[in-house]
Length: 176
Image 1 (cartoon, helix red, strand yellow):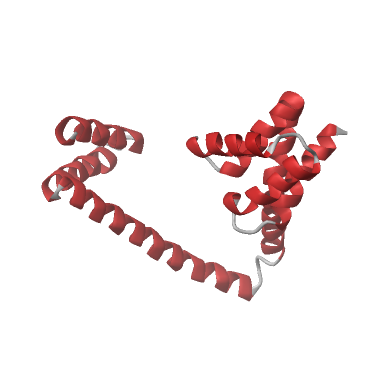
Image 2 (cartoon, rainbow, N blue to C red):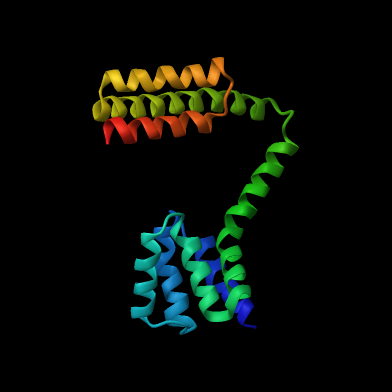
């Protein structure tokens, strides 16, 4: 029964909460502290503070920790699954719908309009990274790193991770 309670305690806030992890935290607190009494408000606040210091989405960290605290490894797995299940279900439904109507002119048109939008967003992201890099390191260092990365990627056909690592080493020694 505890696994079902854990599932509901995390599934319901994630299915009705809109706005990501920070928006559902009060809903999770209501379930964990108010409804089930698994933690006090102080313990929940400390868990939230600890979760905010770690990388990755807050909702899954909170679910994993609280589920583990309540029912061990199985509880952590159930609570984490309940947190991601609403998004997973919506993605599968959307994917199924798109696949079902993949030959539709409307779906094809929508797909054709999404690609340029993504291209513009990626271009903007690249430009903002370049501006920030130039602002922090200067044009000369940015040009050197870009030139070496281009040679590594296009001429030598190396994996991008090597270009990133070399850029980090360059920045660490010459700019740090």
